[in-house]
Structure formats: structure tokens, C-alpha cells
Length: 322
Ligand code: SF4
Ligand code: SF4
Image (cartoon, rainbow, N blue to C red):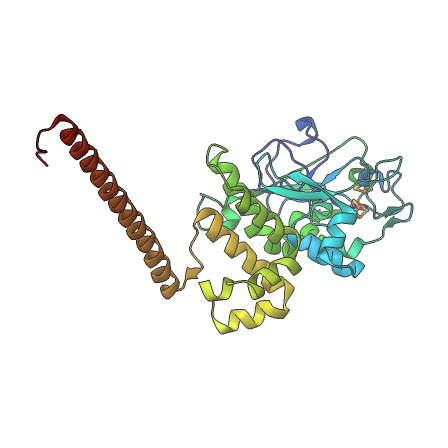
């Protein structure tokens, strides 16, 4: 019915789905794009929709964008109605996961007939039973070199008994995974970067709020870009401004760049020269003011001390030496 991705205990970048952390369900074989896969999922399998219950599906920004368009509701309404907060990949990065409903603890989009949002289903629902590990961050420059796949074989999933054979490449193309990979990759890298920094490197609450806002509510992020001092602060070319104004995907990709820059100092966005000058002047002026204040206080203290000394000398009837 769905394709899902598991958190399997390897340090994989595709942490967006966790249903079963039992490594015994992960076949210990590294698969490539050309490896063979025997699997099929369709309404006639006896386990149909079983995997849409008791599941943790983390939504990527692209998943949210696509689903809320499908449902024709604003992002914040989608997030409130269909998701609940979570932390991403054991970091302090806030994200959302699908809020399960009903007695059977099922996905809100599942019915006995199948997934009601199938063509727009989340990324996590597309991968199963093929997980992917991506070690691009810190690896070589060839993304394919660092990628490998693994097969998840859970006892309840009868799809492995179906005769259909594919290569991993064919399976992924059929599931529309490549597009999702492309759309999600920079966001996944932000989370993996956070994970590799370790929690001893603190991220401010404001930074986490910004990450959450940009990741879950592009309407809000657009307002932030166009209705704050953002465009006065950053050097953004006219072409980019035109693209992110109306195109949600462009805005989303831009938000990843912005987050990488502000959270981790990655290159890609430049603060305007005059803004830097103003900031430097502000700091200098603050320093100057602080210095003037300190000098003033010192002079006042000195004058007070001299006065005291004079009165002390006058009381003794001897002239002061100051
Ligand atoms: S979105 Fe669709 S495929 Fe994914 S869990 Fe929900 S019902 Fe199943
Ligand atoms: S075959 Fe596997 S993926 Fe398909 S519905 Fe059954 S459990 Fe889910």
C-alpha cells in the first residue's frame, strides 16, 4: 500500500520514518541502484493498509507543501490539524510528524480502500521497503558513491511474497522517490549537520523557532522575507526575489539556503555591505557611549573623592595636598 522508510539504527540521513527499530528486520546486504528487488504492494495483498497504522511519519517541508496543496488549506491549518510536534533524529531540531487517529491509531489519510492522498503521499511512505543511507555530508563529491540501500523485511508485510521483480532504480522511479530526494536533501542535511555537531553546541531558541517556521509554514516564511527588513539586510538578486515571491518550491529551497547560512554559517547568502557598516558603526557607537559613560563616572567619583578629602583636611585644620 505504501512505501515506508525505517530508522534502522544505521546513521542514515533518511530518518523521516520510524516504525520499527528492530535491526533484525533489516537485511544485512548493501544494495545499489542495480540490485534486484522482489516486491509489490497493491489492494489485493492480505496486509493491505496494515502499515499505515502505529507508524511514525516525519514530514519534510516538501511533504507539507504538497499535502496542504492537495487538501487546499493553508500550511498552518494543515500543521495544526494533521500533525504533532516531534524532535528530528535525536536532535533538538523541532519538526512535525503525522498525528495518528482513531482506535486503530491510524494515519488520518488511510481508509479500507487505501490511501486517500496516494499520489501526494509523504516521502517516508514512498521508500518502503527500501531504506537509503546517504553519507554525502563529509564524504566525497560524488553523491552516488556515498549512497547505498538496504531492504527492510518485516513479518507482517506480505509484499515480499509477490512475484514482481525490479531493480532498486526502477522501484525508486516508480515511487517518485528521486524527486523527493532532490526536494528533501538540503533539509535532511541541516538535521544531519545538527546531529553531527552534537548537543553541546547550543542552538538558540530563536534559531530553533526559525527552523520550525521555515520547515512547516512557508506562508509565514514568505511574510518574513517580504514584510520584514530581510531584503534590506541580505543581498538577494532580482531574479531570485521574483522566483521566491510566487513559487513555493523556490521559496522552500531558498529557505534551506537561508537556514544553512544562519544556523551553520554556510556560504550562500551575503549580508549587504552597508548593513555591515551600519552594524559596525552601531557597535562602535555603543562602545563609544559606554566609554564616555565610564569616563564620566570616573570624573564624578574623582571629584567626589576630592571634595571629601578637602572637607577632611578642613576639619583637621590642615591644607589639602590635592
Ligand atoms: S499518507 Fe497514505 S500511505 Fe502514508 S501512512 Fe497515510 S495512508 Fe498510508
Ligand atoms: S504489502 Fe507491505 S507495504 Fe504493502 S500494505 Fe502490506 S505491509 Fe504495507
